[in-house]
Amino acid sequence: MTALRVLFLRNCRGITDITGSESYLLSVVPRLQSVGCETMVACIIDPRRGETAWLKAAKACGLPMTTIPVANRLSGRDLLSVIRLIRQYKVDVVHTLDHRADFVGVLAAWVTGRPVVAFFSGWTNWPSQSLRGRIYPWIDRHVLKHADAVLSDSASMAAQIDQGSAGPPVVIVPNGVDTSVFHPDVTPSIVWESAEERRPFVLGMVGRIHPNKGQLEFLKAAVGLRQIHPRCRFLIVGEAPPGYETYKKDVLNFIEVHGMAGVVTVTKATREQIPGIMASLDILVAPSVTESFSITMIEAMASGKPIVATNAGGTPELIRDEETGVLIDSGDAETLTHALHTLMTDPAKMERLGKAARAVVLNQLSIDVMVARLRNIYKEVIAWRNQRGGADSNSRSLDERLRGALVVARE
Image (cartoon, rainbow, N blue to C red):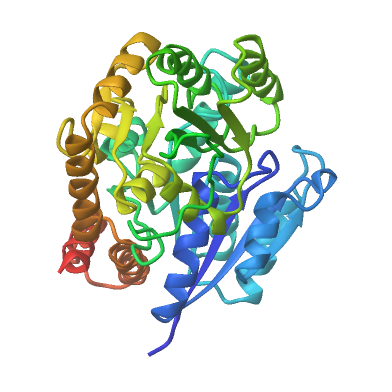
């Protein structure tokens, strides 16, 4: 059987660390290769940023990748490069992963006559009222009308992009993680020195340092919690994306002003270190203002960790309040403090939530299930494209094909 050839296209001009889309690629691409798909990742980069943490991680795990340097965002070099890659590798389907990649991928696929699927996880890089926050979503929405299918990781995100009969089918493919890598028996990688016999209780956030993620809300809650729980320690793992360095400075300044340098650690981590970091936490905290279907939360769930998160975006689809985690309203540090304090004082509940969360991941959110769904979607999009050019006027619609692809993948 001939292997499916998939070209992933990701715009990383403004990306330095590993965000959700990078984790998506690092998880999905190797697994697709193991089930008979030939993959290539084309990464649009700003050469002035040098070798970023993401590029180092991709190289370390042997991701089949080529970089396309684009110093000026108005350049069309990436379009020409992608057209050439499609022809060179005889690509069967193009899979895009952000607004610029959507624009370039859809146009390159049209030029070469290839199908294209786009992964949509929201427009969260800029404030909604900023110029970019208004223009980029408007452009992307129009571009995505010309994709064959749009994939999203949650119903919340899918609702933002679903254009009904005017747009392509929108398919929900929840994220998945490798449960052999993230599990409760991983050895913790971060240990705090303590004069006490018992180790400190650790609350942590993992992800980019960005206003949408809520690190300042986390620290505001930490101020109150340290008065009640003097053994408590706080961990922030991640880096600020370009353009948000000021927010990181605000985070560091808050720690200094409130005299929390001894109890709060802000650090970076490689992808290989994340399982050990998850194992170091007692509770994962996710006070996001907006969220899709967080890979970080799934990793914590697979690790058997209880989560306190805001009911933003796709999070309520991932976490059932008081069953697999605790959900609160966003932007309320007092409520976050109370929820964390309540959970910290109930070890039995923490254990119950962690076990229930891992069971959900094992049954529904493994990387193998996710990859099977993606592979079936590619096959159906290609088959529909081929059939559409034939004489069969009674062929199933692409919507029907994609629904069938998901059902088959679950079995």
